[in-house]
Length: 277
Ligand SMILES: NC(=O)c1ccc[n+]([C@@H]2O[C@H](COP(=O)([O-])OP(=O)(O)OC[C@H]3O[C@@H](n4cnc5c(N)ncnc54)[C@H](OP(=O)(O)O)[C@@H]3O)[C@@H](O)[C@H]2O)c1
Image 1 (cartoon, rainbow, N blue to C red):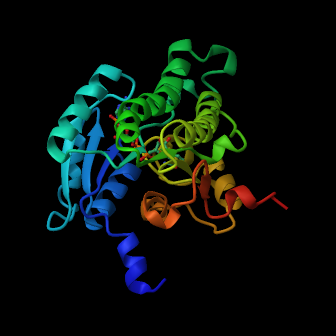
Image 2: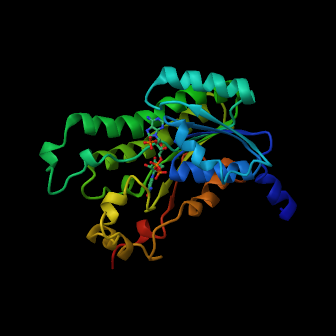
């Protein structure tokens, strides 16, 4: 291996990558990086207007991208999105399941005990994170099964390893995403092709819209007690920034990880490794 060969592994020219939740903070960062590495990127989100905020920073001179409407909890809408993506790019080489998140109504706290969390809020979190990973894996994984090659990358979380306080549904849903990652990796390799790989990353703590209300005070912007505890438990002493994920994402999508499947890779500043002592 030399530097030229290494660079070629990360040249995504002619490869199509679908990113669900691609208009979000983390998915959007991945979209920009992949277009920058010459991929054809389909940004799939339930509010495509949001993806327009990426237009200012997406490197348009290299890879190509399209913005496609899709709801990861609705199979028919995903099939329509798949048809549009295939019409545009002709194939799907990789899927990143980045749509996901918690819901403040499924979070315990002074206003709501565990016993009062509304069933529809709990179901919504399972639907978005688990069903919203399984359905796109069916719809786009079928294309990969026909092609006999492809890569699926799921977004798990630190709370899949050990649940965090206050967010029971989100913790359980992400644990299920990690479990499903391993299941699908085995199934795809044995039933369709060993050239179809399925992995996940488990990000630590990245300050984004879905957790800002838990980690910072809305009025002062200061860290909440929970935010302070997280930083105290992160050996690197900071929150992640979206670009911190890119090394792991590009590696798992590229042939550099050709023998890696069923893995869940923490990108967490050491959070998972630290016992607290
Ligand atoms: N941020 C963190 O610290 C962290 C840590 C670990 C794991 N993660 C995971 O990383 C992934 C991305 O998180 P993020 O922080 O980038 O969140 P984000 O900014 O909220 O991005 C998620 C995107 O998914 C979209 N979305 C929501 N429901 C959808 C649906 N049914 N169909 C299609 N798109 C939908 C959202 O649209 P709306 O804005 O309209 O809801 C948003 O654009 C999630 O799976 C999250 O659980 C995040």
